[in-house]
Length: 265
Length: 261
Image 1 (tube, rainbow over the protein chains, first blue to last red):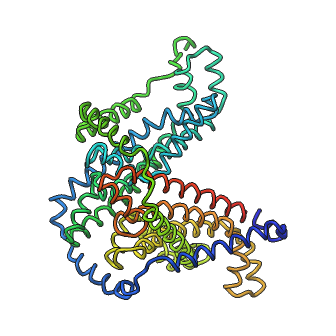
Image 2 (image 1 turned 60 degrees about the vertical axis):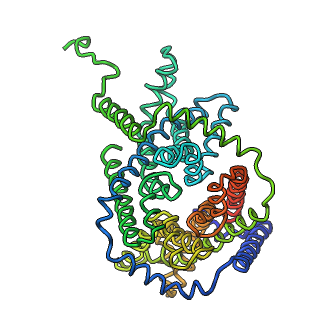
Image 3 (image 1 turned 180 degrees about the horizontal axis):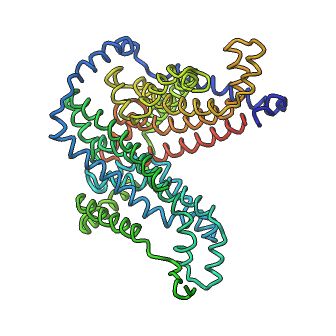
C-alpha cells in the first residue's frame, strides 16, 4: 500500500530537493559519459555488414569439433563447477557459522567473517581466476579455486541468514539436556537449516555452471579454453559449436536444478 | 504392545542420506584426483603464492594516467549501458507482462528475454567485439543485452503482481491505453523498478571492469595486460581501485533507493 500512500502525500521539500539533485547528477553523468566515451563511427556503420559476415562464417557449424575438443572441455567445465561448489560449501560453512548472530557472540569474530564474505563477493570470478592462474598455473585447478572463492561470499551470507532464522526451541531443549556444542549443532540447528542449505547449494551450482564456462578465457580451464582457441584462430564455425554447447548446458542445468528442487525440497 | 518394546531410536539412521553423503565424498575424491590436486602441487602453489604476494606489495603508485583512463571508460560504459538497457527493457518488460498483453505478444518478448539471459556478458562481449570492433562500444552493447535480460524479466514479474483494480478504474473513465499505463501501472511498479535499475547499475559496474579482457573497453584490458606482463604491483593497484569503485557504486545506489522509497 506504500504505492497508494505515495500518490496522496506530497513530498517534503527535502525529498523534492534530493530527487532534483538525483536527476541533475544522473543527466550530467550521462552527458559527460556520452561526450567522452570513445566510439568510432566508422565501426558502427560497418556493424550490420560485420554481423552478417559473423553468421556467414559461423554457418555451417563445425560438428566435428565436438568429439575432438569440446566434449572433454565440457566435462571439465562440469567438474570445475561441481567441485568448486562443493569446496565453496565446505569453506563457507565455518564462515557462515562465524557470521550468524545467534551462534557467534563475539562481535570481532562476526566482523572478521563479514569481511571475508564481502571481499569474496566484490572480486569478480575472472579476477579470482587470474589470481589462481598466477599461483597454480593455467588449468582446471585454478578455475575450481576461483569458483570456490567467488562462491564463499554468496553461500556464507545466505547460510548465516538461514541460521539466524532457526527456531530457538530445539536448541534450548538440547542445551538443557547437557548436550555438547557439536551435538546441539547437529541435532538442533542442522535439521532446521538443511533445506535452505541444499537450496543454496543448487542455486549456486546453477550460477557456477554459467561462470565456469567463461573462466577459460583467462586460462582457467573448461569449455572457455576451447572457445578461446577457436576465437584466436578465427574458426567461427567452431565458435558457433562451442556457443551452442554452452547454451544447451546452461539450459540443461536449469532444468536439472528445477527438477531436483521440486523433488527434494 | 508395551511402550518399551516399540520404543524407537530418537534419531534413526537415515540410510539414503548417508549413501548420498558417501557418494558426494567419493565424487569429490574422484574429481580432485582428475585435477591432480596433490599435496606436492599444493606446496609448490603456496610457494608460488608467497612470491606472487611478495611482488604485489607495495602497490604501484604511478601510471595514474593509464589507471584513470581505464577506470573512467569503465564507468562510462556502465552508465551508458544501464541507461540504454533500462530504456529498452521497459517496453520489452511491458510486452512480456501476461496480465496486460495478449499471449502471442508475451511469448515473443519472453523469448527475447531468455536469449539475453542465457549467455554470460563476457561471451556477448566477444560477439560484439567481432561486430563493432574493439573498444567501449562493444562493451556497452554487451552490457545493454545483459541489462535487458535482467530488468525486463523482473519488470514483467513486477507488472504481473500489480493490483488490477486501479487499472480497471482508470479504464472505466475511458482513458487511452497510454493513460492506463501512466496512471494505473507505473505508480504501482515505479519504486521496485528503481530498485532493479540501481541493482543493474551495480552489476554493470562490476562487469564493465571485466569486458576489457576480451576487448570490450575499460580497465579490464589494462588489468589483463598487467597480469600477462607480471606487473603484479600494478595489478594490486587496479584491483584496489576496482573494489573501491564497486563500494562507491553500492553507496550511491543505496542513496538513490532511499531517495525514491
